[in-house]
Each structure stands twice: as C-alpha cells, then as structure tokens.
Image 1 (cartoon, rainbow, N blue to C red):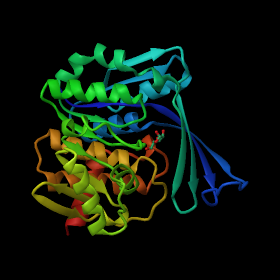
Image 2: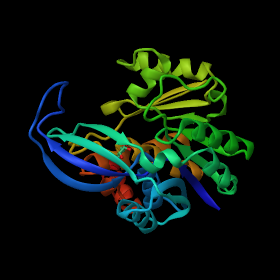
Image 3: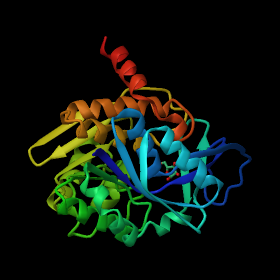
Length: 307
Ligand code: RIB
C-alpha cells in the first residue's frame, strides 16, 4: 500500500529570471534560466517521494521529451508511477517569471493535463482505494478532481485538497468530503470571499469554509507560517525565516510534507512544523523540483532550529 497518493498536474517549467514581476503593459529584459521539472501535482509527488516512505501519483503526460524527463524525475524520487498515463497532447508547460527578490508569477498551459479526466481517474480507482491519504490540487479538469474526491471518500480515505489555482468557488457538495483544505492566503480569500490580511481575518475566512463543511483548514499565511483552524481549535505554527531565492513549489512542498507526516501517523502540530521546515528549505533554492529537500536535509534543518 502507498500511504500517500497525489492526483494532479505535471508541467515542464520554463523559468525566466526578471528584475521585477512585470506589470500590465510593461516590457522587461529577462534571462532564460532553463527548463525545470514542475507542475503542482508532480512537485507534491516528488516531495512525498523524497520525504516519506511510499508515494504514488495519478496524472497525464505527453509522449514527448518533457514527458520523459518528468516521468524519470518521479521514478528517481521513488514515486510509484503506475497511475501516470501518456497521451498525444504535449506535456503541460508552465512559464514562470522569478524576480530578483524570489517572488514569481506563473502561466500554465495544461496540454496533457487536460486529459487527466474523469475516465482516467475512474480507471485508477484501485490506487485510490489502496492509499491512506489522497492529496489533490486544481490544475487538472475540476470534474476529475471532484470525482477523485468522491472515490476517495467512498473508500474511507483522508482527503486533502490544495485548492491551487483557486477557482471562483468549489461546489457546495464537495466541501463536506474534504478532510483538510490547504489554501494559501490568496486562495483562502478567493474561496471565502473574505479578507485575510490579519491573523484574525484569516481565521474568520477559514471558519467560513468550515461552515460549508470542510473538516479543517490549514492555510499557509506567508512569512507568519501556517494557520490550522478546526471546529474546536485555532493554532498558528510559525514558519522558519529564510532568505527567499525562489518561492516556486514552496506551497507544494508544504502540502506534501504535511501529508507525508500525517500518513505516517504524526500529530497535526508536528506535521505542520515538519512541513514549514521542508518549505523553508525549498524557498532558499531555485526551481520547482530542484528545490525540494530530502528527509535527511529536513531533519537536519529541524535539528539546527531545535537548539
Ligand atoms: O506550484 C508551482 C508549480 O505551479 C510550478 O512548478 C508550475 O508548473 C505550476 O504548476
């Protein structure tokens, strides 16, 4: 049994270095930093592979050189790729601007990810049944995400949804099927329709999503770290201050690291602290999958912060 199953996108990231994130109508001179394996689903799967003991992924690649590189990266991270299909659409592509202070913006061209549809999910129901925690994001067709969530609940699995990129709304009947919703501040604001600028506002926004039926909300709140809100608890777990080189995949690393610990039976606070550490390491490195730490690196980081 693979304890953690990730269902989602795989992209090749075309990374551009820019002096600042461009404004509308602005032309900037940049540099091509390279093509780096990415995609929110694949980043989470690689993180789970490097940090845990048994991860699998369901997704869709193109039959092209980018697809080959992405599949190889998953295998090298120890991820079970039995749920990865290959189709005649091009592998997903993301164009990422990374500014001098480590911020980014991203355009995703879904390509083969659009073929990770309801049929592909249903064809892999056995993998869903054979996992403990199912982690999903929203870069594949939303109907496929919702079908995967329904199947995971049918088999009594723990469902963690990272609503990225955030849709305008999630269907009301999906909220009660989500055990833990993991948005960042922007996604929390969008889904709840409420401001999230202060800790109190973020908690109120999270509570609005609990009222719709989510079991818990675990929001990443930038430099403040992570905020867990459940019906009976509010807990802020501070992040680790680091100099940002590139924030790409930090959220993916956080979600996967948290789920890895959770699937291993750790408590919420311990899982969140571990996730904060893994995400902090990734923020200090360039690229998506190139930035994701191993278990040893994350434990060493936590050891140094413990003294
Ligand atoms: O979360 C970061 C990821 O978003 C990138 O790797 C890019 O591919 C997009 O999916």
